[in-house]
Image (cartoon, rainbow, N blue to C red; front, side, top):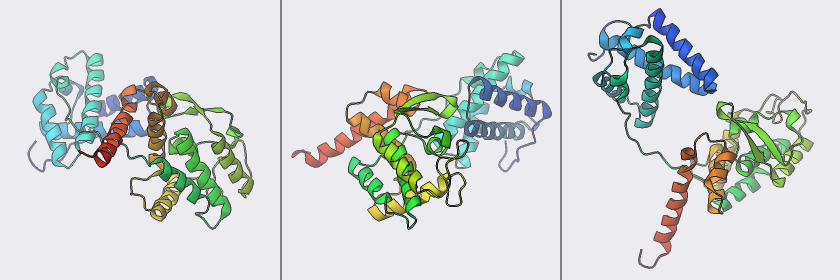
Length: 312
C-alpha cells in the first residue's frame, strides 16, 4: 500500500463473514462484549488495510492468497500509526484467528499467513499497594465524603475489591438479591466464567454499614451499590473517589480501583498462597495470567535486598 492510501469499504461477503465469526466467538468461546468490540476493531483495521494494500475490497478468496509479506506490511503500517507492540500483538492474534476460521470454511491453505509472528513485548507488572497503604486507604475512605452514606458506600466497594479480589465491574454488578452475602459468593466474571469467592467478615460489615445509611431502599432487582441519584453506581464515581484518596495519602497515579485487585493477589502470594488457588479466586482463564504476580513479588524482594544488604 502506498503512503496515504485510504482503506476501502468492506465487500458485503466479507462483512457477513466477519459478523458470523464474531457471533461464533461470542457463542462458542463465551467472549465478553468488550472483547468482541476489540476483535471487531482489530479485523476492521486489518481488512481495511488489506483492501488498500491490494487495491480492491478484501474477499474470502483474498485471504487464501496472503503471505508473510502481507502480514508484515500490515504490522508495519499499524506500528507506523503509533500502535503499541502489545496492542499490535493482540490485533495480529485476532487476525490470525479469523483467517484460520475462514480457511476451515472455505478450504484454502492459510499456512503462509499464519506463519507470521506477533511482536515481542514486555508485559508491564501490576502496581499493587503495600499492605499498610491499602489499610490506610480504607480507613481514610470512611471519612472521605461529606455525605456519610456515600463515604460508607465507597468504603464498602473498595473493601470488596481489596478483600475479595473482585473486578470493579463485578462489584458494581451486584444486586439487592445478592444481599446478605454468604461466606462465599458466586461471581460471574469475564467470558461468563463462574467462581466462588470467600467473603471476609470485614467486607460483610462494610456493606451492612453502607446499607444502614443508604437513603435508597434495597430492592432485589435493583443495584446493591447506588449512585448519588439512586441509579446503579458507575465506575467513574469509584475512580473519582479513589483519586481523592490517593491524593490525600500521597499515592502514585497507579493507585486505581483495579490496583486493589492486584494488591489482593500480590498480598496473598506474599503470605504463602499458591498460584492455582489465586488463579481460581481471581477468575483467570489461564495460570500464565496469574503468574505475572510472581514477578511483582520477585521485584519487591530484589528491591528489599538492594536497599538492605550491606554489599548491595
